[in-house]
Image (tube, rainbow, N blue to C red; front, side, top):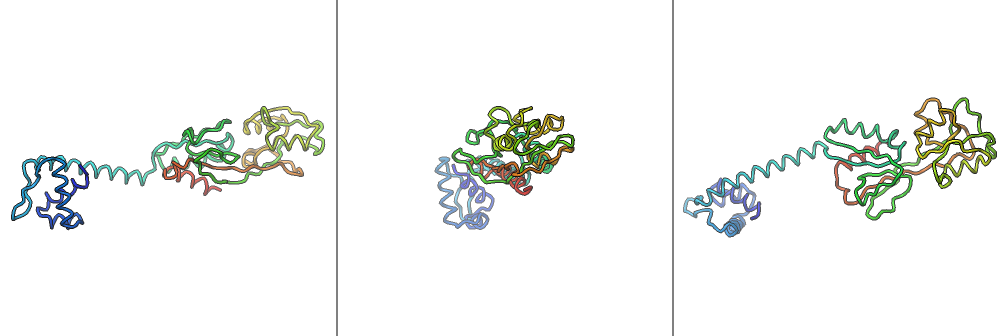
Length: 281
């Protein structure tokens, strides 16, 4: 049976005539009569006696009325639940990003959202590996390169400037040579990273003293006196003790891209989180 037909049955049972029920339900009288006949055919019983005074419930109709009222209450409860969820953000959203970007840029924004929406749970994954949006390993991802997965909606979030950093005790490196300079750079395969390539070209005689694929680790190595490193300004400017060196040409910056799968484009909690990040830039 169709729930809309059950609602018509309830309107007739409560109003007694097709005309009054039609006005209450906002339907035409012929439509009310037709849908009642469909419902009676579906249950296999006459639910009303047609009398000169209107419609009177049969025994079967009386039995149906109890169940129909329960269905109505459940439907109203369902609508109230959805309305409540529309006002209060709830559920889990999994976000993926690089280590330092997640710690220093995203965490303050996401923590503020969880304070505003106590029923919202955010899982922030900071890892060197790339999480698949198509396989729902993450719902929302931030990367330094455009997405190549099919079905992903993406946009460039921002451009990040990088600088060369040491400490007040670090001798200024000499561009074109770098003899005696110790570099703190990326881990295995560092030459494929633009900043590591720039360091090798700018300081060809420098030696690599420390390698890590974690920007926070690199920053701490610099603060501990291991050498100089190319760091995002958004990270380095938060850490007292780091000193930026003026070098020409400056280190290359990086673009940050944000993406999510098209299947999630109507997910309200994703839209709210994404809008909050976009507003921060």
